[in-house]
Image (cartoon, rainbow, N blue to C red; front, side):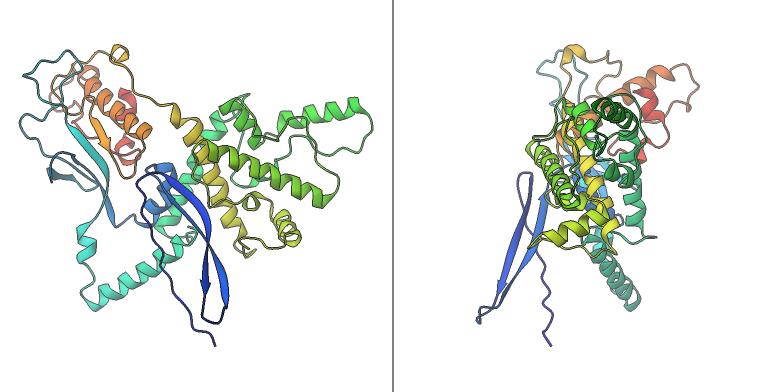
Length: 405
């Protein structure tokens, strides 16, 4: 019996990268096999959420000065905030003179919880950590978390968020219900195959179908203003089943290539992962050497992950990328002076992209500025306390940050 070979692959990248490649294993007898590998590195929540999900209990969000070795102090359970040192506050965006303090440059990101590294000394905790590591390894394999785990709950929230946003804002003619992956995977062809020779009847049926059945191509056209190369609204589905599967695979390939060209990180999503189960079986049947063959008992989980990532990357490259800093002339009036939370400079991050850091800075500014205006006539102690907004979930739960925007 052949012995199992355990491999652990890792890499580092100083810039965003997403690739799919093969690793060749061979011995001195010229026996060899290929192992397909995909890898992605990018500072963006929409890309690294699987990592966040599988390390929920092992990391915390920190905020610290870039120019200081360690100026962070514990503020609450889920975030570290900079200690308040004299001369480091950021002034309001007004004219500055030499006597004003320099802008504080901040890092916002995740850091491994030190306590988790020190645990595992006792036999009980050692067994617990071994089970946790096994569970983490299972989740990290294509990230298909098991039901009942924290990672699964996190993933379902991500899926629901994508479904909600695109159902409301992803379509050219108003809201349209979306379910990942069922409806979007099923309603791929805008124009169905019709055997009727009457062109007028065919056009009428096409019009009715397009009205009630939206596709991924409607989303792309609505958000980008153009169709992926090789896809046209007037094309129809081939009559032959094999040809239909081949055309559908081509259309999915075109969508993925279009998104890749815009900066999407979806090297792990192959076109066949976006097919219906029966279409996927047919594709494997007609393909000589498929790169990856999915066990059909796992196909739905793979398909759900693939379509979720496609929609998240569509949002990243076609919507989030539009976020740019406001020039000083367009900023709202600032009523709070010398607060580090007004126009904070989030210079770097290991989880947030530039647009995400701009949004965090914008929310911090508006919250700190508006809370003194909205609740200015309230009794002492009623005004919401100051806070650092360093994430897009926990810090927004009470609704106060949204109210001040």
